[in-house]
Length: 266
Ligand SMILES: NC(=O)c1ccc[n+]([C@@H]2O[C@H](COP(=O)([O-])OP(=O)(O)OC[C@H]3O[C@@H](n4cnc5c(N)ncnc54)[C@H](OP(=O)(O)O)[C@@H]3O)[C@@H](O)[C@H]2O)c1
Image (cartoon, rainbow, N blue to C red; front, side, top):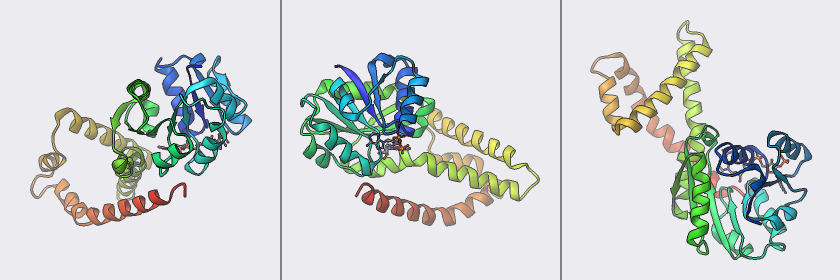
């Protein structure tokens, strides 16, 4: 009964199974997976021999105390509604859905409910999972979820009011940064004879190294800019151009994402 159930074996569901099992946080026999399609379940069973496969969401709910809903926001309330009739009340429901609040989840399941916002970079054991517990979550359940997700990266507790903004950075952020890497590499390749794949490799390595540098030295980005962008130098010319345009670009991107966040799952 104390197994961890994951409903939805898509991008996030498969990443969680891989992360929890590969890190040793859970054995395959401690995990049960349910998903809509036979194809997803077959892929899961092939990847993790010995893992529990449930033919239906309710079958999973009967076997697990911790149930992670890794379906899309628009499917989350339907799936919770489906399983709630077979729950006993002492389960913990963990929802990954952006835009679906604790209040809505707790109205359907008036027990222990936690919202969790993982990030695709946890595939490589890096990045921050945001965790936001509901009112009914006791110490034991809170620590269990936090411990489980810390097996795939960092865990940061946030208030629900801060979840949208924090999600933009930790969960949407990899998509934003990937665009920046692509654009920077593309512009460099277009303006030079550097092959695009080589430009992309250099840009990717540079971004990883810059993040590691800032994290390890604790230096502020502004100080790093000053170190690299010496007066009249090459970097300064680029920094000046970016400083003129980027604030407006990012204000627009953040506003668009926050607006969309409010509409997700509605
Ligand atoms: N992608 C990200 O970077 C990210 C980051 C943070 C949070 N999230 C959240 O994580 C959740 C999942 O996102 P995702 O990117 O993993 O989506 P996804 O790849 O589309 O996966 C969703 C999965 O849900 C399954 N499913 C759909 N309806 C179902 C049902 N009624 N019963 C059981 N399974 C069902 C689908 O199954 P089949 O494959 O079997 O058809 C699919 O595999 C979303 O709520 C999203 O907001 C995603």
